[in-house]
Structure formats: structure tokens, C-alpha cells
Amino acid sequence: MRPPVPSRVRLAAHRLVWLLAMLWLGTQTALAACCGPITPAGDQLRQFLDQSGVEHLWLPHEHVHWLTGLPDLERPGQSRHATHCSAYVAAMSVRLGVPLLRPPEHRADMLATPQTQWLETTGPSQGWREVDRRVAQSLANQGEFVLAAWANPDPRRSGHIAIVRPSMQTTAELDQHGPELTMAGHLNALRISTERGFEDHPGAWIAGGKGTVRFFAHTVDWSRVQAQPSPTRP
Image (cartoon, rainbow, N blue to C red; front, side):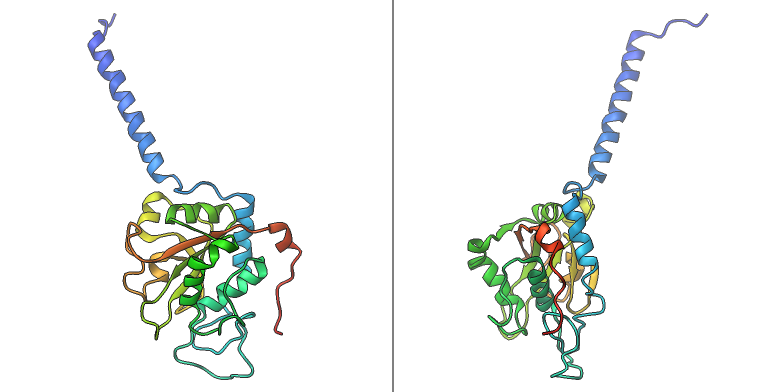
């Protein structure tokens, strides 16, 4: 017959089990998605972006029509400096029925900075609100139209703007790399981090959200989007 285990040993064992359980829970919390689940509306947004054609339309170094992303037949050929982040965002805003500065209110080139300024000044009266990076990712996961926008302080150079897409990243990933984006620009991507998407603009994204990228959100009436065909070339 084994001798009884002293109560202090049992207590120490219980404390060890409790400590290990707390460490496990802490690890799971750290690894959990930062910004809530992707809702059915968020999944609609994800599918909408995946079907937008951004990987083969609104391509850099081409003259394109802002609404369709197709090559502009009136301006054939290549342009060394042409990128179309703001045109892509404007076209998606049309398809979603969300107000945003776009042609013909402003010319299609050098539009990202004016769009950012419009979001700040006129946007609130049109249903837009500014949010932080975590809320931006959370609202995208819920199916809202969320933009990451940066105004270039040099008026002779373009800013940058992109769409936040639903993502199940962790808090650590969000703080280091920013919300996940879909964008046109110096490269076109269905999935890209804010850090990578704004890499051509030093200081725009700094880990911890200390850069100058700003996030703006607007609700989407998905019942209306479902019935709305994609626009074609005018």
C-alpha cells in the first residue's frame, strides 16, 4: 500500500495544473483572431473583392478606364508612371452604391490624396466614419466597405488608397503588418498587408499603427449589391 500523498504536495500539483491551464488559455487568446469572426456579410465582401478582377484589370503602367479597369482605347499604349489604386476603389464604390469622390467630380489621375481629404471633410456627412486599425479590420469582417487611405504631403506626387478585406489574423499580426487589403497600385493584389501595400510611401505604415495611414468605414446594403450588375465600358 502506497503512503498517502502529503496535502502540500497535492496543493502544489493543483497549482501547477492551474498555472499550465492559464498559460494555455493565454496562448490561445494571443493566437485568436484579433477582430472577430467573418460574418455572412463579411463573406459577401470577400467574394465581391475576389471577383472584382483586380489581378488582371487596373494594371499599373497601362492607360485604363477608371470604371472598368480595361485598357483605355482612346489612350492606347503604356505609361511608365500610371497606377490605379484610386480608380479601383472608386469603381468598387460605384458597384457597392457607396458615395466617394470619383470621376467626373475629380480627374482619374492623382485622385488618392483628394479622396483621402474628401473622406476626412465631406465623408462624415455621407455616412463615412474614421476608425482605428483594429476596428477597421473588425468592420471589414462584418461586411462594411473600409478604406486604408494616405494623403501625400507632396501635391506633385500621388497618395495611396486600398480596400480592407476580411481576414482572421491575430492581434500580433495586425499590430505588426496592419489590416489585410485588396488593392491596385504599384502592384495589384487580392491579399496584401497594409505594411506591404504602402511600402512605396515611407512612414505611411509603422508597426503598431504609428504611421499616417488612416482608415474610414461605410456600411453596405448587400441586398442592393446582389441585384446590381457589374458596370461595363461606357
